[in-house]
Structures are given as C-alpha cells and as structure tokens.
Image (cartoon, rainbow, N blue to C red; front, side, top):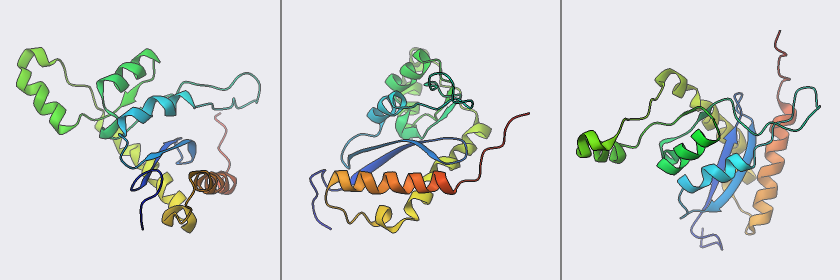
Length: 167
C-alpha cells in the first residue's frame, strides 16, 4: 500500500467497556511500542455518571489487557491508580524472572476465568472493522482516519441496546 507519514502502518489502541463498546481510542505509528500507550489511554477515560450529575468517573472497575501491556511501569501505574487488573506475564519476562531465582520476585496473579472476558475487546475491534473504511484505511491523512474511526464508534454506541439498570 505504500508508506504513510505515520510509518509502515497505523496501530489502533482501544479501551472498551464490558459490552465491547469503545471508551477511548488512540492512534500510533505502526512501529511504536504498545506498552507505552496504556497510561495515555487511562488518562483519557471519562465515564459519565448514570444520573448525569457529578463529574465523570476516571477510575475503571477492572482492567483486562493483553500481554503487550504487561510492563512493570504499567503495573505500577495501575496500582498507583488503585485499578485492579488482569494482565498475563509475557513468556520472556517469566523466563527472566525464573532465571533470577528468589531475586526475581513473585509472579503477578492472573485470574484465568476473568481473563477469558478479554474477548470483549477483540469484539470491539471486530465491530469497528465491520465498517469498510476503518478496516481498509484508504485515508491518507491521520485526521481523516481518526474521524472515520470516531464516526464508526459513535454508530456502534447509537445502535447498541440500552444498558439494563441494576436493581
């Protein structure tokens, strides 16, 4: 397809809620590391209160993330924000920790049952890719592609069934 100004490709980073609808979307050049994008995603979270009164919530109830976001800095940031998280450890980090022996520290706790719910994020990506303009990315300019993805995310929110109120 050719070289764009962002590099060879563009990465789409997404923070989705429990029903697979996007809350925060960020774009990076294809060669940028995934692990550095978690904190900016968390900084942009703002969930409106159900009554519409008060300032929006900034802290998530729980974060499920891929191994790519499992750096020490990200885990430290999540603990500082008091956000419980489920992020599996990468294989190379596990081997390195095991090689250090008792100096390697404890492995992070990963709830395998809870991690299975991470498919909601994959479903959110798939819903966005149902829009051909998002999946193919014919847009040359970053601003136009961001606008295309934003419009697709808005359409997904508008078509979603309303949330059930908790009794």
